Image 1 (cartoon, rainbow, N blue to C red):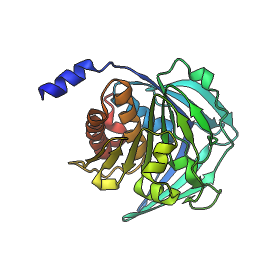
Image 2 (image 1 turned 45 degrees about the horizontal axis):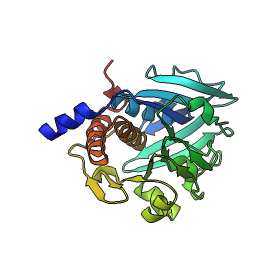
Image 3 (image 1 turned 90 degrees about the vertical axis):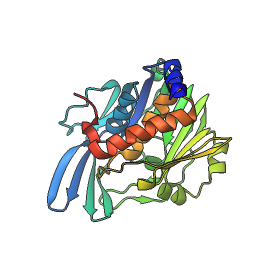
Image 4 (image 1 turned 135 degrees about the vertical axis):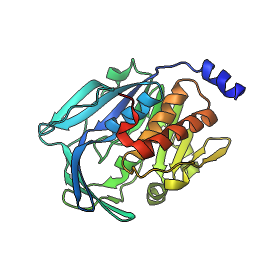
Length: 273
């Protein structure tokens, strides 16, 4: 406990994390209930940054049909306007879920010079709105999901696109869930060679594994809630923020796990109002 307290005191706070990705409109069907709400990585990743004592910025895209408030914890850096917002239909049926793309839009023009004052950037597309490239930045986190999704309007999402995003950074973090990693055909070694120093692989209720160049850590939650949307976004962003704030990988993993337990039970209500 004393060691943890000393580590907490050494951590500098309020790192600024810029999240790049589309805002979405999500239609969620669970049994007989239909809920429509705003979504996308900026919502869930922004919450993770905020809960980890960081400042969340959004380099986002929306459509002219987006009539929702953007969360107050998200400082808008850039807002790209398209004709339509990306819209998804998410259907839960027991233990299964189906995700269908209803509307899409084009690529987000990304100008890294506009992010130069931020401590780190988090690339987290939902459906190919960020171009694959080699990204150079002082600290960078990448979620595989929106890069490997094959997104066709009116069709269920599949994971068939190749992941070829390479990074050059002082701190680089990668996230995928177990199914996404399998679909990508990439190994942990492959990801290290692509420039990712720290790799998080989520595995549902079994928690996640963290791979660094020197060790592998496995963390399993004590509490698993029923909230099932945005968990990976929240985990990656909170871990990345703790690392930027000065925590080492092991401590950042423990802190991110604790916050993820809360998010899985409380969802977007986890943030005190």
